[in-house]
Length: 303
Image (cartoon, rainbow, N blue to C red; front, side, top):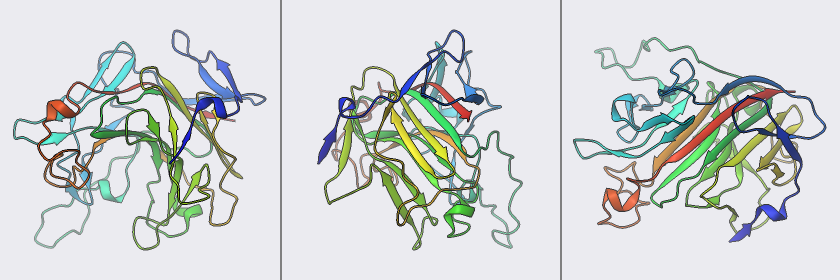
């Protein structure tokens, strides 16, 4: 495994006090930006005009996704805390919040004539393309689950053309405490035509991880331009611009936002029985009951 540190990456961003009373953004120097969408998580409840819970997966209610009734999202002190919960019937759930939806979010209707027609779809609360996408967050500290800041297109998988159908941009994914994997772009849907490319680009068989202190908040950002993607962690560029190389593409399609968590191995019947579980007899309390993925703000800028 190749371990990166922040000190190895060039500092290219400076502080910008964009929202009074809140932490500054870290914006690339030498450019002008205009804030077009943000959530600072003020108040004492999730702003449902901006966020919805992801609760379905390929037409069915996903038993591992937390819904509003599970109390897995807490808003306090201008921070959104995403937590894992154990439900009264013994399930383990954790939340995913999004500003739009794609095909697998649409619930299947139990009807005599099958799937058709589809139920009414909710309009997105926010879609955008290009610009600077920034999240200030504090990673989970306990093993057993992961956190992410990412985007998807409403048309993801509806065409194998990534320029038209869109690309999933994984701006931040942390699968283990203090470790962030390369920024990954998925295209072509989620079947046989699936493809991806990474930043930093993969040059060999070794995995690349960025080691971070999980105690403080960190900034994760993507600059999405017509000729490629640049990624930043705490104002430092991580790898070269990607999207213009062989097997790489730049989406021209609007995306929606996600901030999310997921318990490892949960797509079995429980977190302790799934293929990525840590221990067969691990209890919920030993995993993540006292942990959280904390999001201070999400901001989207146009150039």
